[in-house]
Image (cartoon, rainbow, N blue to C red; front, side, top):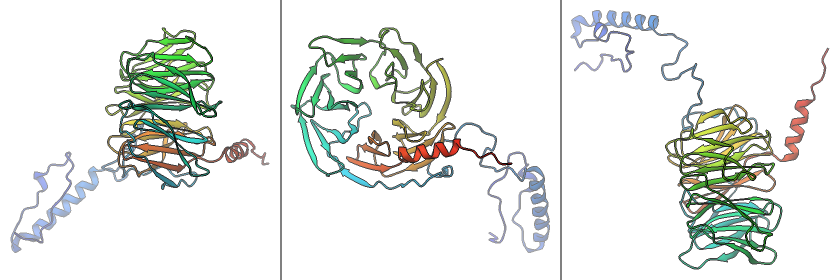
Length: 398
């Protein structure tokens, strides 16, 4: 074989390969082959648009799935891609249907049969509660206005723990299967279960005081009340998202069926009233944005990976998402165009759990790799107010 002969590695389908195939020749016919090569190169230049890349689609409007070799948009501020603290979390379960982390002054985490708190200021860890085996903690949620912690387990029980009194003050045994998600609406705790029901319990009532939602056909994976406390968004293993009112528990206002996998991740916008973002599981991978006033699907973005959790920052108009199969990453999205601002790596398993710090500047993430990682992501509220005011004040130049 003559090693000096040249070969083409990419031949567009629009060019006849047989017309310009370079033949291996001996020394006497090499000059003729070089002339054919020159003609072939000229034909390539005339057929291909020199301003168009062969591997990119300049006119494609849909957002590309985020993968390692897709660059982020230019950052408007510096985001540290390394966690500022990592804590070991033995027995932190790798279960998509659990919700085991929350943050309200103290970070709370469910590890197996126990509930622990960690103080970011003093670095102290305290075992808050221990359930009798084989019961597992499946969900935890701080009450934002009071010193109460709601704890759900895999048998269907919900407990209300008073931090000041250091004891359980309420216990609800109305679910028949595990409780995977919790959220507060003032003094009312809302719980979603594998038995497909949603229960709202008022902890001020001595007995009863419950409202039951029976809407999803399968397990309830995610729950979140709107910032105005009037609408409840729920996601289920039936791939549906439902918007319900406290006044109509059996009749959802809207039922969204556009997702093609379980919906656990939910986030209401703190910047625009009645705007909701939802995230789909492994076979869906999309973030969808809804106008809950009209029921309109405003946007859908393919993220390229299972969405396990998300938070919408109040300090800046950005969303942070935690991902599972197959990238196990954390992504920050700049609104309103949903551009991927940054991608953070570090967890070796799915990023299943996430919570925002009280000041809105940091997040903690948890994974089946049995670690908690703390990230500084968002500006302070003071900085955000200053930026917003500077954008509003525009000098009149003459």
